[in-house]
Image (cartoon, rainbow, N blue to C red; front, top):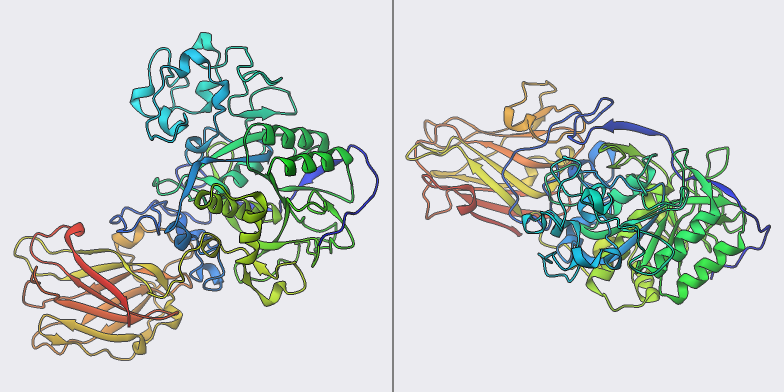
Length: 594
């Protein structure tokens, strides 16, 4: 049980909890300072998009799905793909971001920006259609042609989309700002949130920090753009109280919390801290939020001037240290499930941890950025709580919190450091069944056309395979049209061959090298079957099988090529068949535990 720390009561200034920034990217994915430097993949769509989204940079988001990329530890993650088998979020969930605002024009964020339903002018609301039937008007609805036109909304800024920038314009210019508080409060035209610095209805992010947090919680998933948020569907309420410098008055955060609770947000994210400064109005706002069932998710903080984490049990940092059961304090872990050196901790005060090191997410002006801090860990927990609420919309705030805390992955590095002893696991929190089936097939493509024989097959699996653990012992069997094919010892060439075009279009974090696994055929007159896989530490989902000169077509009605292998976690078997003229979505595929 956390104990309240008493101290001075005054208006404090604060600094957002963020460490060094790097790898700045453009909205299109190619960055002027990018270390990622890869174009979006153009491969076949996945068979189960609920598991692995088509967002081109998802492969770099180790916090959601850690396959060992860039030296990480396999499964040191939130198991997001497994959670998405259960839910990808809900537009009924309103999550407030008490931060620097949000880039509401961002290609990965604009559809998930909150709209204050009661602030929509009545005459305009009567003309709008709830396209998806969720009883709300969201930006997903507004981007349907049925809701465009005079008296509804049009693309006023000419960017080809309907965003908050359009509806925030005055009614005289075709927007929705009519100069009236349609919901009867003191905030006029607060259509998407509020700017508590300028006291206006425009909470546009002029720093980037708030947009980064927003992307972790709710960047639109499976839209073929940028990254995936934990919630593909959600409403993000922009409450700006931090200026472009990343600092602001705690009194602004206090007002923001009161606003969030009054306008239907069930939780708010606080990726900031005011170390050692107990402020009574903020404590009162948190207590009031509790009465409304509102959850405060707060960063534990990044330590002091020595850049080393402090123990919040003895050195409080607010709002994380407030002694309320609706406050969830979050520490930061790295890609190997270790507590980061800068993260604050506390066996009584800090509840759990989440990945916060080198987190890629959205940034201001349509960009993407990889950065670190407990600021990045906090929205991982906020997003997980939103996923749980999507599954259990009637649960109380305490039930939601207890579910997340009870389903953490216990880690040695967190024992005695956080109250739960663990790192958040979204899949466990939403009740996803344990993954016991191993990888499954997302796509199988070959170069067979008409009566031409197959000479190569590419298999894309749902889970990465670590080449450093892949040996001939993992090749359980390989069978072609004329019988079994025997493998020979595996040895990396150490060379960097020309990257095939199909691989060049795939997202890569590190330079690509190739190991060649020569699997000589026992079929008379045929050339060896060769399997190629990148030797980088990132898990590999694309396996290229060159089946040259097999001398026969693969039969549509039979399984002609069988490739069985073992993954780093478990063994699995793949069977694929492709006949003349078959399209990718007609393929027979099977991947089951063995």
